[in-house]
Structure formats: C-alpha cells, structure tokens
Image 1 (cartoon, one colour):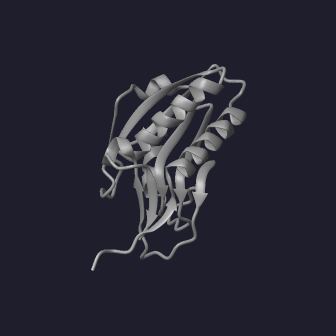
Image 2 (cartoon, helix red, strand yellow):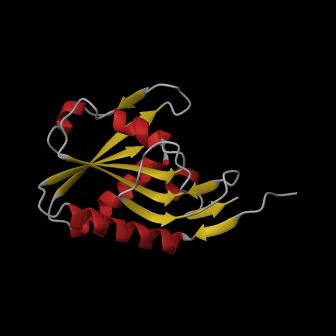
Amino acid sequence: MPEKKLLILNKQQIQQKLDRMAYQILEDNFEEDEILIAGILPRGNHIAERLKTILDGIAPFKSRILTIELEKQSSSLSASIDFEVEECSNKVVILVDDVLNSGKTLAYGFGVFLDVPLKKLRTAVLVDRNHKSFPITTDFAGVALSTVIKEHVDVVLQEEDAEEDAVYLR
C-alpha cells in the first residue's frame, strides 16, 4: 500500500511564504549594505538562493549566498563551507534550512560562526515543526506545524527533485 501524503504547501503557497520571509528579512536589515545568506545543503541552499533572488528585486542592499554542508548524523560539528568564515566578520548572516525539526542542524550551522564576531545571526526555515531538542528558534518561518514526532515533513523543490514544488506531511 502506498504511503499516504498530505499536501501542506503547493508551489504557489511556497512562493508566497518565501516572498513574505524575504520582506521580513528586508525589514530586519533595511539599514545594511550587505547581508550574507548561508544555506545548509541540500534544500536549505535552494531556499537561500530563492530568497536571494527575491531580495535582489526588492532590497537596497546586496546579498550573497554562502553554502554550508554539514555531517548531520555526526555527534560533533563537522562542516565544509565554500567561503572563508572571517569574511562574515561584523556582517549580518541569515542561516537557512528547509525544515526545523529538533534544531540539531541549525545548531551545527551556528557552530560554523562561533569564532567570528557577527553583527547579527538570524534563522530562516520554510517549515518549523516545533519538536526542538536544542534551544533554537526561527526568526523567519514560512509555516509552523504542530505534528507528532513519528510524522515526517517532505520538502520537494524543483531544483533538487525535478518535481513541482510542494511540502508534504507523511
């Protein structure tokens, strides 16, 4: 029997959520000259790129994409980055992922910037599941879902999955 999937967000709704998040990021950083958008691979990076595209059209500041790859199953921070972390000194960084579940991925993402004096570090996620094991909150969230722990949220993005954008609960 196929697994039952419940559609949470369709392509248009995902775009609306990203547009709203981009405007919230603009409001939070309107006085900045540049912000850095750090996407956590794989889907967080795609969401970061989409946010950058929207911000490039509405914001007076420049935005730049940074890519973070984390070893999510590791019991300690293991990350590879495509930038020199010192470049982030005294700048605003928006850390982006697709789903916030336990908070471990974002906590590891924070770890990348621990030794750098940042102006601000904010978080952005498309889906906040409210199952945090770590003291992580989202500054910009597309949608917050109260789910049971055994349920799973699937974010399908055209760049990654070659299917139409959607968010499913299964």
